[in-house]
Image: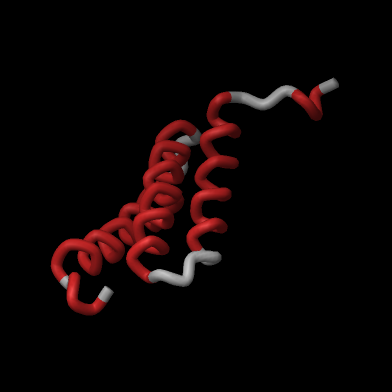
Length: 77
């Protein structure tokens, strides 16, 4: 059955989706940004494997926002 065969690319996509989804359950904003960044990084890898420029660019942008707040705006996170 084709339904149960999952490629490594799909597994990375699922892991990325789970990472981003889990980040929205975080109450602490710093933890949310860290978990979300992991999900975004996995989405960037997924985007390169597809290849999909919109997936890559969107998640690189989100990573940039997360890193900005995690590194440069520690007082606000």
